[in-house]
Structures are given as C-alpha cells and as structure tokens.
Image 1: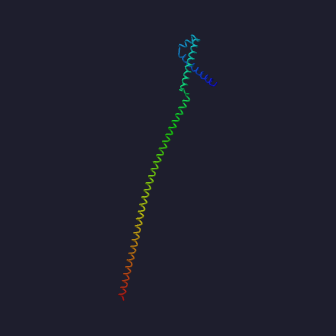
Image 2 (image 1 turned 180 degrees about the vertical axis):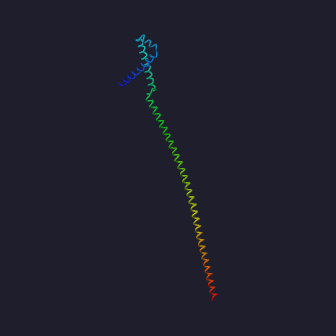
Image 3 (image 1 turned 60 degrees about the vertical axis):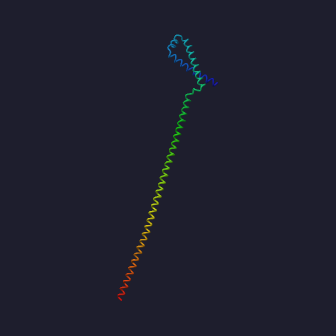
Amino acid sequence: MVYALLQGHVSEHVSLQAQGEVGAMIDASPELQQQLQQDPEGAQIRIDAMIAQRCAEITAQLVRNEAMGKQKDPLVALKERELDLRAMDMQRKATESFQDMEMKDSQFEEKTDVDKMKLEEDEDQAKERIRIADEKLAQTEMLTREKMQMTRDIAGAKLGVEKMKRTAEDRRTKAISKKKK
C-alpha cells in the first residue's frame, strides 16, 4: 500500500514535469500555437500524446538511473561531500598538530641541550674559579707562614741583638767596675 502511494506520487510529479516541458515547447513553437487555435481537439490529442511520450521518457530515465545507481539525491551528495571535506580538514588539522608537536618537542630538546651545555660550562667555570681560589688561598697561607717565620726570625734576631747589647753592656759595666777598683 505504501509502495503504491509512493509510486502514484512519483508518477504525479513525472506527469507535472512532462506537462511543464510540453507547455514550454508549445510556447516556443508558433506552429503548435496555430494548430491549437485552428483545431483545438486535434491539438489537444497531439499535446496529450506529447505529454505521454515525455512521461515515458522521464520514467525510463528514472528507471535507468535507479538501476545504475547513478542518481543520488543532491542533498545526500552534498552531505557526503561536506563529510568528506570535514574528514579532510580533520586529517589536515591532525597532521598539522602532529607536526607542531614534533617541532615543539625538537625545540624543547634543543633548549634542554643548550641549557645542559650552559650548566656544564658554568660548572667547569665554577670548578676553575674554585681551583684558582684554592691556589690563592694556598699562596696566601704560604705567604702568611713565611711572614710569621720572618717575624719570628726578626724577633729572634732582635732578641739576639738585645742579648748581645746586654752582654756588651754587662761587660762594659764590669770592665768599668774593675777599673775603678
């Protein structure tokens, strides 16, 4: 029943399309217009035959298209195209995103390598500064020891000179005391 209703509806649309096309042909043909005015009944029979022939042609074309599967609903074809475009856009975005992530990863690795090299360089410089500071400290310590030793030596020499002066003074005092006696 539904199929019969659908088939009747399609036949009605085919008939309307055929009537429109034949009407356009009549409007474009002065010969048919003249026949319509001279013999309306004969012209009507000819017009009905043209409409029937055009209905048969349209129906045959629909059957061929349906059998071949070539006729797609334009809306379905449009939606399929839209879905294809969306899929291509999503694929492009995914590819771009992947490439962007790879580039960021590469940049991060490069930055990490540069930072590591800077740290190693800073570490080497810090070690060199520590070595130089240790050398300076060792030199300062050695100079301080030498200075202290020299100070002791000078103090010892001064003590020795003082002792010699006292001894000489004591000898003089003894010599003077011996002379006075």
